[in-house]
Length: 142
Image (cartoon, rainbow, N blue to C red; front, top):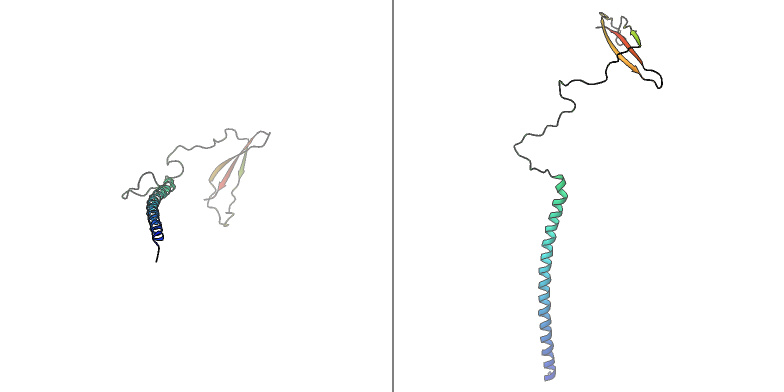
């Protein structure tokens, strides 16, 4: 059997341990609440981060379900516009006539007529020398 002194000592120790247990349980509860709060804050911040990462790639306006698909703008100038380009030379220094011959050089067939002509102006720009403008008159068969 235990003596009275040992018994009281054990009761005192038991009381101290109970107080310590209550304190630790209280601390545990506080830590669990803090952890839950931090996890909620983390989830909210993760959501905001994902939103910010995707924001540059999202359209500023929501798509209208009933709208027509977007057609890209056609390239180049509009039809019927006034043409622009290099002006024809006013001075022709040399004219070269190129005869078409009587047969097509590609297929060998005889031309029916050689009355069609077209012209091509070539501006040769040579360094330091004056420019030479040549007009070629080319006969073509039909």
